[in-house]
Image (cartoon, rainbow, N blue to C red; front, side, top):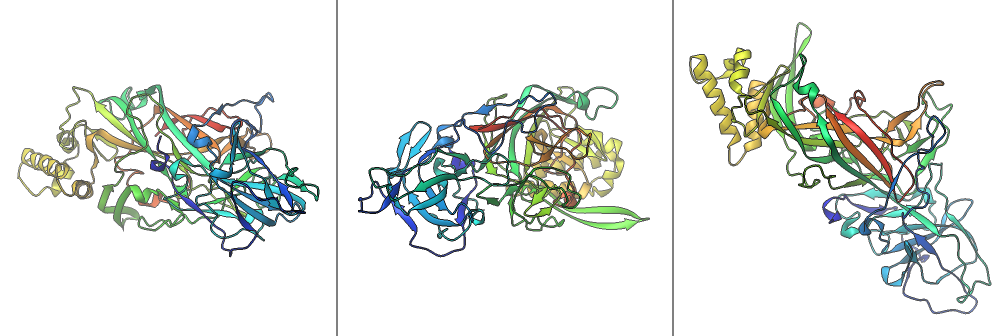
Length: 545
């Protein structure tokens, strides 16, 4: 697996100048009389306690349930480390040491540092594994550990099969460093040491697959069937939606939020404040990537008639493009997407809402196969179909017969048959356009207000909830999950049901949905499988609508 195709980037941004305490450690240090030394054992996410417990709220019977998943070689590898010694009271970084791969010694599930010359004292030890440069840009000395942030970019983070890691966290307010006492007797032959330092990946891992069969009965059967011409559906792939570009190096939690406004939950992950943009489709969401506006272009004007809004569209274009995140074999779990943790409901010290523009999720692409007797016209590709006013048709002729009003904008022909033929010709010309296919289809959609499912392709948007952290909103109520993705967790999403026909472009036609509307949690079905690391599993069976 080539991670560089899947992962987005990061470099450290600490905003401080270089300092002599930021040292590069080679293969070995020459002993100096009267100096003191230490050595450390560092273990990656291989099965010890992790940032998140195995369903920390417990099941109703008090039991713990869940599972873990051993990562791949690339996901577990520690190739370089940055060791931070901090004052245990103030958490200020007093010494920083960068150690490259040639100086590290492999041990079971991790590495050991060489003997490091340092200063006497009692410290908390923190480790950053696999920083994106040989030495962290800027020096961290005199900064508190919680002031070091990961400023995410989009090109280098975890490239070349390396994952950034930091001391594990167990859902408490602070990530605790390992205590080390370095005394005058800790010479080169007797270096100080501490308990093995256990690391979590800062990454979130997301996979998705389909169940043994996908239930489409609500779409195809019964009196309320949306579109009974559908024979089958196939998951083509998925892309990340609303990837965060900021994350705390040290995970932050609030163990009690009582007295802080009306916020009801007793413990929640706190992530940095990030701008999700405005309701304008063209608004730049600078602090998220893979926004809905990256997947589509929608332009419309609004007028009011008798207090009813009337929308006139000028662009409705699909920008989804190539999908790199899937395997070809049907039924296999799709290849993973990696991103950074994100909790849209609490940022810094502020209570916030989970919105369409700030909540991490997926945009799915599905392929519809029509029944042989569906009467499809193929004007927008094999298995294409259309929608108008909430109804679905396998051919433009069937649509125009049901809604003759669409023919009013056809300028060629005088009879109904001639106009339908002209409509079909216009559709096919757009679909077969050699230089601006999506643009021409966009103009067709906007002109006739017809949803065009080219090649039978449709889209669903799904926002992710962490399955391990259930919060009680009110006394006596059942615990609920909150929208978030958390570090060192693999979110395994299994689609078991499609409840409605998807949209013909990612996110649908309404640009106001991006990004200011609240996330709608209705009609999702979930089961929990979660435990401690290697990867903490957050598993869901989901229904798309």
